[in-house]
Amino acid sequence: MEHKDKDFALEPIPKDHRRGFLSMFFVMLGFTFFSSSMVAGGTLGQGLGMKEFMTIILIGNLILGVYAALLGFIGAKTGLTTHLLTSYSFGKKGSYLTSFILSAIQVGWFGVGVATFAIMVNKATGISLPLLIIISGILMTSTAYWGMKALTALSIIAVPAIAILGSLSIFKATEDVGGFTALMQLEPTDSLSYTVALSICIGSFIGGATLTADFTRFSKSKKDGFITTFIAYFIGNSLMFTFGMIGTLAMGFADISDVMVAQGLIIPAIIVLGLNIWSTNDNSLYTSGLGFSHITKLPKNKLVLFNGFLGTALSMVVYNNFISWLTILGTTIPSIGAIILVDYFLLRRKSGYQSKNMKNVNMNAVVAWAVGIVAANFIPGIPPVNAILAAVMVYVAATGIEKATSRKSLTNNDVPIQ
Image 1 (cartoon, helix red, strand yellow):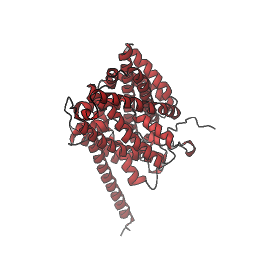
Image 2: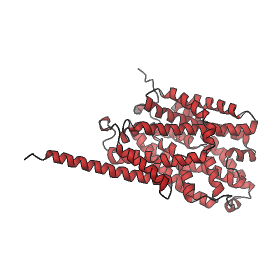
Image 3: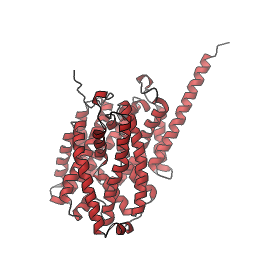
């Protein structure tokens, strides 16, 4: 009998359903080639000079790339979704909380994408913004319903298109300010600290990076899962930030749609950025559907439809609070992925994921996650990095104490009674 769930939301991906390097490469790039990353890059452009900006995106996306690639490696090896992985690290019931948060965040990202596209079309055509939001949400939700095949097809079209349009925008912006040398000498209009800038850079896609296993579980090899993910986050995300930053530095706008209008590129922008946003939004709905399916055990496709409706309804709320949204991501999400990683390399790298080793709630993970959030919010430095380091240290220490206590208990039980 043919398996009804072709996305295998609640079980490992069988070997005969795995995909090759090129297919996964386009899917991962399609995920990270996101116009809202250009908006985040534009925000950095308002507060950083070109040299400072390059330093920030190289460091930030290197951290993001390594973090995502390691999770991609685990996903490819196990064939499990992020939410099934958290069932082992956080416990069966404990994982419901992390799945809810990760999935809700992706619904929010879907809303950001819908609003970004609708606003751009509204500026070009004058068509009612609420109507454009509704139409965009319906169209983007419809393809997400069909799963990985639709994601791959959209990504193959969108990735080259956005690379070409972004390069054209950079060329025009550089030409308008008098060349590359003149561009390097431009000063930002505002001031932005390195810690805030790195938080924006890493936080811009830390939610998506944490969900990397949802895609790389389709990879044929661990190597493919790691390499395609690293390239997508380190190079792909850096390109998106650069496209947005140069447009802002040269044109004075943080919103990519305003930059495109000023450059006379609004028509190609509607087509190309529309495809780009569409592909990433489909990824967001896909992962949110997997997460809520993990919690409710309902079919992923039905949950995708509900999430699409909810994300569309909330689109302008999330869009108008974009930087606050990134700050929340940067403090609450990194420690989830960090715990998945340390749990795998500390406890499961050799023995694998066995259901007999799954707890109902793993308090070590819950406490480590909470400490990571506190560290991100109250310890000076880079919040996402603080969250990762704190969560790792607490989880390793708590697991070590638990093992030592368990061994001591077993030893005491073996002592004969006198």
